[in-house]
Amino acid sequence: MNMHKDPLGDRFGMWLFLFSEILLFGALFVIYSVYFSKYQADFIAGGRQLDLFFGTFNTVILLISSFTVAASITALRNRQRKTALALLGFSISVGLVFLYNKYMEWGHKIHLGIYPDSPWLKEQSHGTNMFFGLYYVTTGLHALHVIIGGTLLAVSFAFILKNKVDPEHPTLLENCGLYWHLVDLIWIFVFPLFYLSH
Image (cartoon, rainbow, N blue to C red; front, top):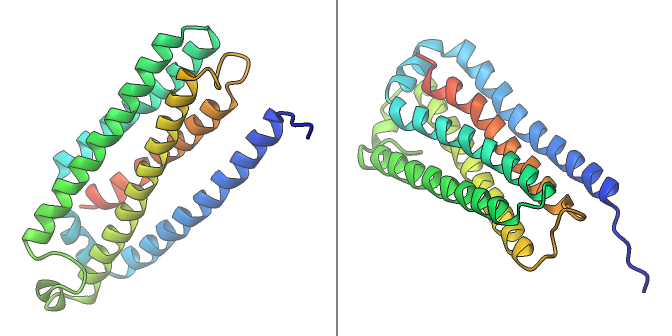
């Protein structure tokens, strides 16, 4: 069987996939906007109950990781294999820190009784229920994408070690980098919508 690589086709396929992801989160952001306009006071009150420190810290580390992923691609192109691996390893570690912070934040909210269908939420207004429902769905879906993105970066790391991804064949790392940038970009919208809504 004659196998050949098609970097252009791979990149085009990745852009189509990213577009579908943008549509998914775009729909959530539209839903948020509709309910925010209807229950503005409840959404503002809900935003005040979120931990701004966690939100800000996660924003900063994701932005840093986006830079290090881009830098790893540049390093690979410049045949700096060890640097590329180090930058990728750092980016993966940052993703894990993000997930740990989200776990701690969710855990604290659940401990306070703020979770979907909780007794506390049942006593609150419909707007408050909508805010926290959207908060858990959106941040949970984003966390899932962080897990997928981190896994893709780990696969790229392993392929660089095995020389299956190199300066002549960087497409896998480039596509994984694009996915990671999308994950960061989505969070740039999630952060102000939920954490700065007040």
